[in-house]
Length: 414
Image 1 (spheres, rainbow, N blue to C red):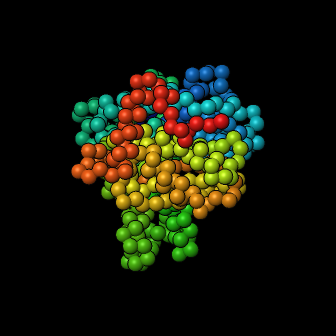
Image 2: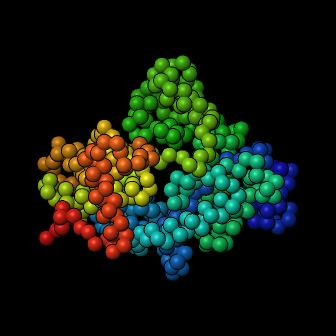
Image 3: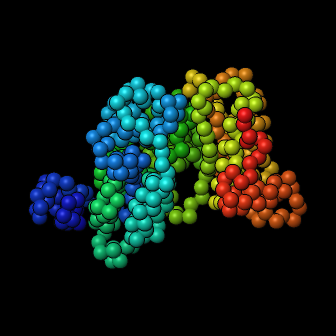
């Protein structure tokens, strides 16, 4: 099989300009089409698409999902993107670029329900689904041809149709031999796209920025650029021994990725690397007292979620955004993993102390390198285990009587 029609699901062993069955030009064609089984599914402008689905009068209007004027854009529809609006853009800049945009506060209950419907359909095809967020996942369809009535490419196009029919939302899919290439492929044709990357992957990757490689952030990208590596092709052409000498094991991984190789499996039970909570202030804050008043409820929120999920972390991260939008991050490693607001707040306050003296517009607290929490009934009682017993009891009271049943004195404001 080398061709599939995305409208009528006709399949053929030759590439064609139009579908012989229905005349559609929406053809997926590739020499490796029936041999690839790893996919990346990405919902198109997910939050904004859910809002437009529920409010048809917004269909042709620019829609931004995000906070108030001092907040940031969570996501925006493709109409708004034509004006230059993008995710994580400060709201005042987004509204300056697109003043006629309709701004909607996030409603995560709707987004969670829509996500459950989409990935519920995906999991009917295979249990090998590794979700990255509410709107994104890798899928491994290896060995499912007989069970699901066709090769993975056929299953995925049929799935794409089903999601659009049943949820009113669209998704873009990339199909490839591994996770990295599947992710790259899903970005090639959006929205409502379906792209395939196979043996030609190295040529497609060569001109692209090194920033598309997993693990290459802004800081590491500067290092690579200064060493003469600006594109994926530059890394592919580099001597492997030189890359390993410069960057160690990371150099070996960069070499593999630059050649389109990625051995990572799709893992449904993959370990979550981190979680966080943050808030943007209505007015800039400078004093320790004011900043701590905003930090405490974030610590309670994050700790409560960690306990619900049964996870903990010994690596805690404080995030501050200055009035010039520069972000300051500081981290600390503790002797043991924690999951209490008390521990999060103490670490956050310690990290914040050296940064005081200037105004900030946002504060956040995060848990990096999250691990499964151990049994709280430890052999030796510590300050953390004592706090955990107290906060777990508070969790139960709040679950029964409401969030305001127990309020810490620190959280009370004038």
